[in-house]
Length: 573
Image (cartoon, rainbow, N blue to C red; front, side):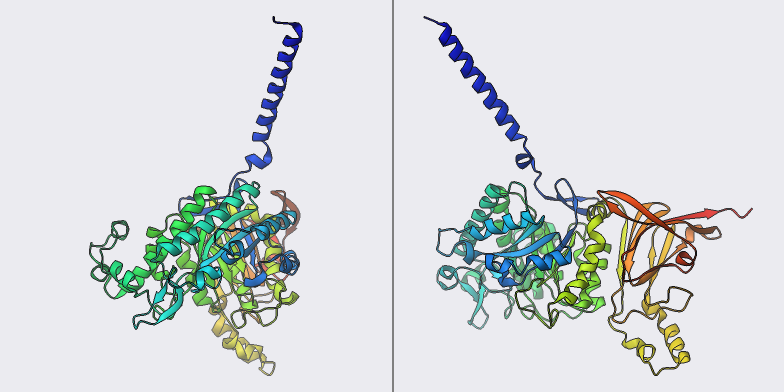
């Protein structure tokens, strides 16, 4: 018999079912569940790292290699705070998460994500596994001490190198299994996406040999080049020696490392599709030497196209820059800033000369910049970086990040949607101006030397209707020729807001706006220069520059100044 009690019970069950559905629906739309996963977007040959649904500029810092333990992080956080960094690049080692085969320990990852989130920092995790600068040092002992199961590269003379070969499934499968476990754990614990980027391996390649000459490798080398590479490169079919001739050894090694890394990345992305990159131990773009003298098989500038064809799941090939000279650095930035490759300077030296290349990187529409060794763990990699890691060394980079941090999102949007320019002081030392900096030189000698070398400190930028001349080492007042800064440290950033309006900032430089050839014969002038800053995505006006502050160009010192410049033409009759 159907009683009232039964009816009440039924209503209660329906009510509880309804409330549970409402609760589940609410949870499914909660901020944690709805957080948008980071991605790398390419449009019209421009790139943006999308974080929380908007373009993001990595103001990064990478730790020293052995800072990847909870006890060391206390010596990392203060440096990042002083730098005004928004993203930490830090290793996660295979030996750390899988010390025994099949037994995983993610306690460091949990601690790192939690502590980074508390500080409002994002993470770029560096997967140190099969390769870390050629060697398997960060592979667990059960891998790196078992050369039978996990073979190393064999040289042409039969000697064995301390570099794992990319030709053995046993190694690839073990690495991939651990990486998938890491990505699975991230999917579970990082629903807010504190981790925004994952670097797969570290400076892959081989020193000491152009490739693996083991019997296994030789058999593959004498087989036909895979069709996917033949089609992508538009070359004839045949074996590696037949197709690539003298470059066959290096191209073979690059292709097989690339497909190895790509398979790992693809498996990880199948779990959690974060953007993934590979960092590059560079060869000198002007004096490269021979493969094996540099890291053969890595994505050096001569094999970028091979890597792009072989590793479609790798979003970026990211240079590690330790050249100090302007010419080499600028060439590297040009080579790795491509319509099919977003520029991310994954590592750069942490000494004074390197800081100014932040401006060049953004001028090439870079999505990020990360000096290496930014912590207080009592290690420096001089001569690649600074001799002493202290507040002075931190400040070289902190001043740049302070300048961009309040408008990092705005700059990233302008870089993705519009036109931007960035230049760094192009002279490495003031040796050419030795007489100027010599206190014993007469004023006449100093003036003559300055005039002779002025072109060295002058850069011309085509901004459309307008041109900008950037010079370094000038008095604010008057038109004395530029003599450069001592040491070289200047830089300027410009973003176009409209045909006649630009956002301009920089340090230790002068920017002078002039009419382009298109405006030849027309009268023009500065209409208005506003100084201000960005707050919560909005421009906040502070004051107008005029008179002395604009008559001799816009002079940027070591203090922060962000300007909006509006140019105009006018009729004389």
